Image (tube, rainbow, N blue to C red):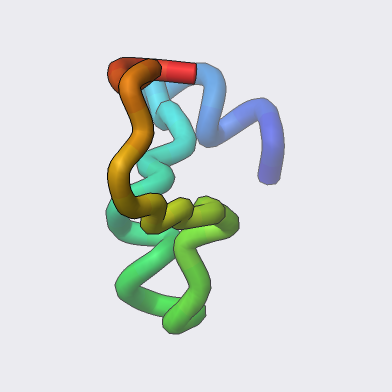
Length: 40
């Protein structure tokens, strides 16, 4: 089965997995009044 996936060029799709499972495996953070902002 893994060989067939490799031959077809299958790649994991995290968006599709999140829709199917109902989980994104992401963490969100909400803060107020911070002077340091941007990607962490």
